Image 1 (cartoon, rainbow, N blue to C red):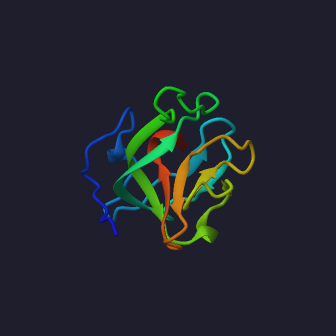
Image 2: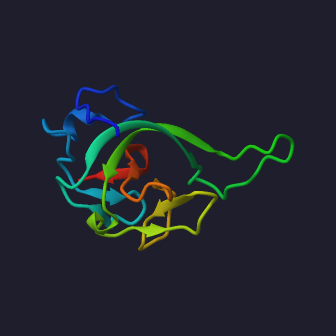
Length: 133
């Protein structure tokens, strides 16, 4: 399992120094970028670094016809949750191989995170895909 690292490098425009407490947990509420719905309450997730590919949430995901690639981003800064009942408001996509993607349960934008079906105790929410307040 990934260790929390409050002094970890920043990803994109996310400044982890104002988001991660000394014990590695989220200091602010995690909310949907589109509708503002609360995804996680403060102190409910641990900061973790893990490379995960998430399909694009800016436009309809398409498979590139020439090489079979999927539009998206490889992200490394995440909130790690070990129990799906910790979330305030999150939905799950249908299975995509051995993965379920996390989405906002209210407006259904996503994916904001990732869950491997082989590991029932790891749910990742990408810091770049959510807001904090």
